[in-house]
Length: 177
Image (tube, rainbow, N blue to C red):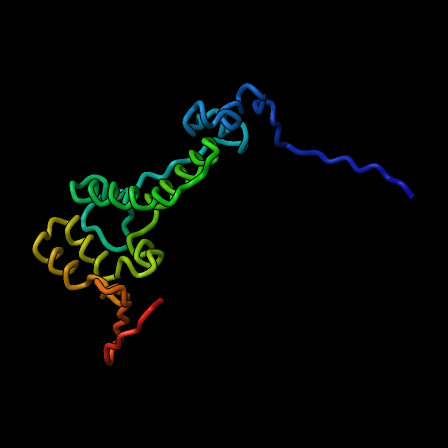
């Protein structure tokens, strides 16, 4: 038994010509910039950008992009992106560029609480609360909150090459070969 199936769709890709989609095939030469026209041709409709109100008070739910309007936010964004982009190591320039763009977008659009959760203990919740206070202009309270919330130095290598592990109940020395 053999039948022919015909699919009909209202969606037409008449604008998705190879010359319009060239942005996707030449990422190294265009530095990863995709035009709105190329995106709309591939996706089928234009990308609707949502404007966020970058108003105070900033909270731990604010993103680095939200904080960009403040001096502290600019500095914090630059530091976070610099730290995150150090992890990109790829010999292929196009893949490295795509990875850098992806990391930049991810870090810039992640809430401060998400940065703390994904930092592996480098940033604490108290620190990002302090960052929000600093962005809101509460300099003394913000600095105090950040300094009091710094992560403890659990794994510390001494000058003799011994690793010291600090526990909440006691400290003990462990020799690591």
